[in-house]
Image (cartoon, rainbow, N blue to C red; front, side):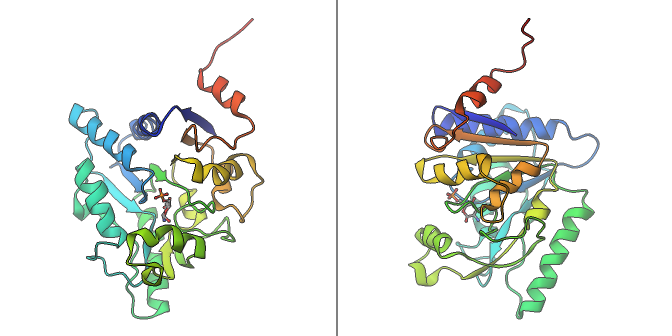
Length: 263
Ligand code: GLP
């Protein structure tokens, strides 16, 4: 686990974009597959990726995108749906074609239909050869995607009830808490762990507790993001505020200096 602590959110976004591009550079011989997160945290990262596109360092016009999650009951053409959010905030920004964007389907008529679509989503990720780099944010309660505390560390894409804290955190995008959906479809922790590289970005003091629990706490379903400890290629990019709860700070800073042989 690589923990990079930047002075401010802008620098954290640059580091995270570098980690994404690094992961994508390793892809050899197949179409790039990028896992996309919603939320405010990765917006700077997407802007940095757009800058990389403008410089000619990368091109997402052939890339497949897979969203982490979607609300149940919000039609995909509504502004608050994660499909629309990703189209506006990510696809248009980095030049990933709408036709290449995959988002879980939260609009089935019955639970069984949504559950079947969720299983098919997992199968689709597997069919394209898996996700090369998965971008992640973290919820104030330690969720990744919408895997709320208590999620099985082996879970697959499925229906989840949203925690009250998550609904409160996300009420700012709706006309009040009463309008925030109660359920979602999210990639499972077992699903997202299969991505070849995970890049998590978190900024601001509100994330400090969740970040510390994810990186330095026990591996536990009570902090779903702690599942990252099981992954062999994780880069976590933080600003000072989000890093403020970490105990091993000195070690992360020293590690970030790179490899040196000292005799
Ligand atoms: C939502 C998303 C998560 C995201 C989290 C944090 O609940 N499902 O994928 O990481 O919010 O959002 P923000 O970055 O806006 O704090």
